[in-house]
Image (tube, rainbow, N blue to C red; front, side):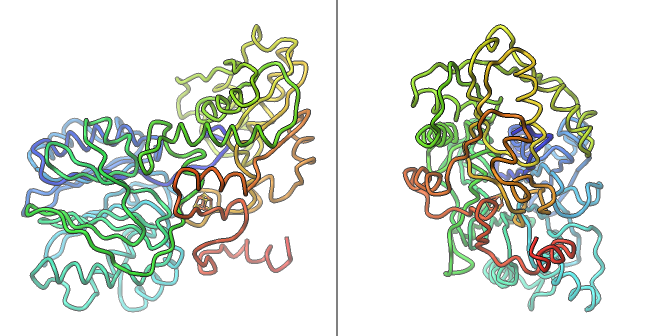
Length: 478
Ligand code: SF4
């Protein structure tokens, strides 16, 4: 899948407590999480007495100036956030971490995920007098925490209990970093939908959405943070707890398939290995004769490798990706998307001319990329183009922090496999089955996977999050 045609992850998180270079390390780590959000970035640092923040729009290099970074350098505790807006608009006020000031102390907040009951909670809070500064679902947490009985009372234990009570009011997917002057608390929702990892750098604890952030700063990856877990880091050490004892692990399947970087690890297994295995599984279900296998760069190359090894025909680099196409080509709209894909992907004629190709892509969302790829490969002389998708047909919107929010945007929710094959112009189209996908995840020690965008079985009730136009379609049985 190409990023202009597909799904976009909402955010990347990184935080570190008690390191003399906390801000520089956070900035470096955020670079490796840039793929999780490119619309804005920010940092909040703690001096131990007060919190200080900086944020801006665009890629990290555009969002934070040298002066802003220098202003945060003296402080030993920092959190950072890269943002793609799937909830709330893309204006500066929604860029995180949020920094709230009050006479009882400062609060820094960064969130990855989406709260399905945010709309209702927000309305109730507004009716009780709250005034929101942003349109982000994440701000709801800060208002609820502030209203929790005993807000401002001294003591980490009391604060932890208030955070626990607040988290219990939330429904949906969340990985939170909650910074006070003297503590960094991280929490993962009871389904553990979004990834959150614990690491250590020079004796200081750090957390990140993906382990590639630890690699970037030379930190050790300790372990994955569990569903329902609540971890508090202070100058005195680290406290492990749960905000709830009722947990239902349902990690996002698309993290393995597409979102995470290939070098990031889950339960000590690289995304690369998992993707390769998904490719091998697809090979068992795809019965096509061909000369070469081509992966759509970059996220599908590992699956193509696994597929090629399984069927014993060579994998070639038949498509090249132009890494230097700027964001000028990321405007919404079908025509702009097609132009973006054409600028980004280019067939290698010498490799594909006269060949029967199997093209492996990790997923199809709108179909724009697939249609372009098939057309470009045939124009470059391919004899046949067979499309293999290393995930099941993506049919449903995600309400847990990914940007596809209506069925109308998703080709497989409107068309059958044969119709999609005809629309993209391929000679055949094969998807990985849901069962084989889960087989692969179990093989790698999964405790449970969300597969709602493939099956429609939403592990967290979504009724409160469904857009009015989607409800209309549902009532009409569309
Ligand atoms: S619906 Fe799909 S994209 Fe969303 S969390 Fe579940 S598996 Fe991930």
